[in-house]
Amino acid sequence: MEVGVAYVLAGLAVVLVAHVVARRSGVPAAVLLVLAGVVYAVLPGPNLTLDPKVVLVVVLPPLLYAAALNSSLVAMRGDAGTIGGLSVGLVIVTAVAVGLAVHAVVPAVPVSLAIALGAAVSPPDPVAALSVGRRAGLPARLITVVEGEGLLNDAVALTMLQVAVAVAVGEGFSFGGALLKLAIAAVGGAVIGLAVAVVLTGVRRLLDDSLLDNALSLATPFAAYLAGEEAHVSGVLAVVIAGLWLGHRGPSVQSSDSRLQTRPVWRLVEFLLEGFVFLLIGQQLPTVVRALKAYPTHTVVAAAAVSVGLALVLRPLWMLLVVWLPRRVMAQRGKRPSRQPLTGRDLVALSWAGTRGVISLAAAFSLPLTLHGRDFPTRDLLLFCAYLVVVVTLVGQGLTFAPLIRRLHFPNAELEDALLRNRARLAAIEASLARLQQLVDAGEQPEETVAVLRRATEIRRKRYADRVALLSAVEDDELPADDRREAGGRLRRAMIDAERESLLDWRDSGRLPDASLRVLQRELDHEESLLPR
Image (cartoon, rainbow, N blue to C red; front, side):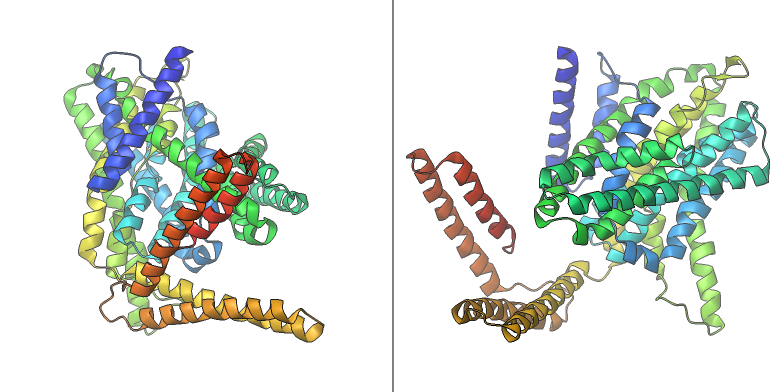
């Protein structure tokens, strides 16, 4: 027990240090954690071996659900074709291409299990790419595409893996049967996820306790996943659909207290799970290389080369042939697409956002230990190929993604977002003033109260109108400094600090109970969170 606690504490310390170093150095935390795991793996002492069941049941649902909550269902609909092509079409093409190539260079690997390896390494895990892309200024539209792809591709890949393994163990195969199973898994998972979301939406409307609401939120991904798996459909897709629906409906069914708690709760869950997952990836090195001595060097090199090479090459080829070329042909024929097509630099950025993660490793580790009653002879080689794809994409693409984005010179997304947010604030303030006038016209309202509210709201409207005017006048694509706004924020922070010190003096002198102190501190904390950084 003590060893386990010490191991968790040591892992947490490494995660914290890696994130501090990442912020100061610009190196992605995912890369640092994987490398730290590799270093630990080669040192003497106990090591953790990845358990695919733990990853698929305990780790995957909350990570997918948290990502779905933060995604935009409206924005994803705008690029549904691109997202669907990447999460379904590219996954299938990658699985088949990698499988056939591995079987060609290592004939001892059955085609079905080679395709199972291809399915394992086909779905990108966008965590590392998005953490880098957001800091480097990746446009919001591309972030939405990468998020949407990452939400859906795991379900397709894992279903393909199950079909391939079923064929390998002798359950039979037909192309039509495989497509039917994939369709049933997808449709069934979507239906169950939507049903779970609708039920929980109704339950949430009845809850007036933010703690109960957040406890229900933490249980949701596991409920959706287990319901899907029990129905023999895609539990992964059930989690994604439930998260997308509840994230979309959350603003209208959750109380303000619940929303204030939900985001930090899920941010902490993501932070801890992702940190330990990347450490776990690095620690699998001894497991995947232990049995490689049984294979000739040229066999290992050939299998690894085609696995990694195709994983890297197929994505840009897909972006070129399936996304860019058809739209180019449409443009030449004078047909206008329903939405502004992705530009060349958009496609370059998306091509390099294909980092793999723990799902690929968990899928590879789930390959059967025996085949037809005997040991599976090439399983260790397939594990090594999957591991190499994960490490090469995480480290190689993770380190080069930010420089690539900077060289592509995307428009300043921060400026566009700031302008949009301030325009939305203005619209919301206009709506609040209109509602106030309706209430005044409908009946007697205290004049002094109305005057105070109107004056405070007019001050906010002028502040945001000035900000919109300043942002709209920018010509160099750089977010402008607002000296008055920043000075106001700085002064108000100093005043809030003084208020906190006064409250602590009251508490320390016995005039204010700790419970009341926490209520008042929370008020100040919320106000400070609204100030410009």
